[in-house]
Length: 363
Image 1 (cartoon, rainbow, N blue to C red):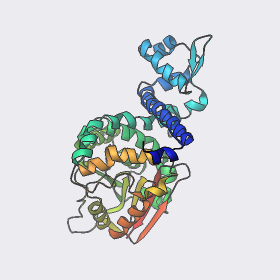
Image 2 (image 1 turned 180 degrees about the horizontal axis):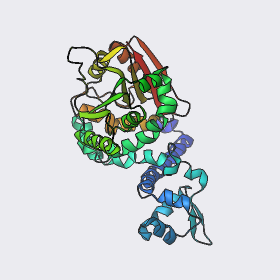
Image 3 (image 1 turned 180 degrees about the vertical axis):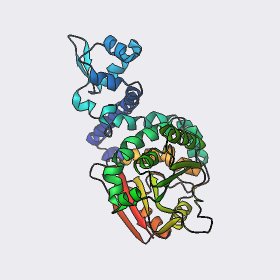
């Protein structure tokens, strides 16, 4: 450290930052253990048990006691699980279970914690991208679509009929009467499957780049006996029109899907061209600003940039794409929608949803 730096060095500021970084280490570790607690259903088991020993908890969960005991140690020191020294028993307070169990959905934050280990699994490949450019392809994330489907089920599907679709006046009535609907970047199709079951007179199509997710979605549709829905693996930048060149769809949706496209501008152009007169594009995407200084108070700002760097941005760059990333922001989103030909764009928020913006766009 130079003499000038020593002269201005703020010991109190340094100490506070050191404490902050120690907290980061503990919370990062907690995120990993939270994911494990969700996947092993330990949170669900604990929520149903009275204070119990590690052996009793392991037996109830049909898991190995030694691993359960170590996990309980992490949860106890993190003040997630409570512990009675005299009886050597653990329990999950109801106030904590309200955000960690499957019964708590759509408020189950343990689902979201799964993204941390999934993204950590590509760290070496991301480092190589820092050094050489390029990106990490979708195939490098073995559980991403599984976790995304679970996240979608509790954040999108659970709010779809009571909150999201009613954002557009008259849309529920149109769906009941029967319209043609496309979901762009549909993944495993959770939202579209729910709509197809709810609105049997409408016709639903889902497009996604991944053959794996499309196959899973079609199997799910068949298992549910849905005849008014189909899923197709295709480039969503080429949606297409009817055989006589007319637009095909009355409603097009995109749930957290546009920002990681290789060619997002081309995708938005195709969406605009594929909507009938008076048709609606309903886009859910991550809330935030396109300007980093405006995200300083964003409660999920760091998480958004991290997910973007380790997934959304890099999968686009792996295809030679634009690499918009999850933090493309409201300003950029509105700009691109306008450039695609949407002359009327509304940005709406839901009171219970701190993560997303909902864009209602019409030509």
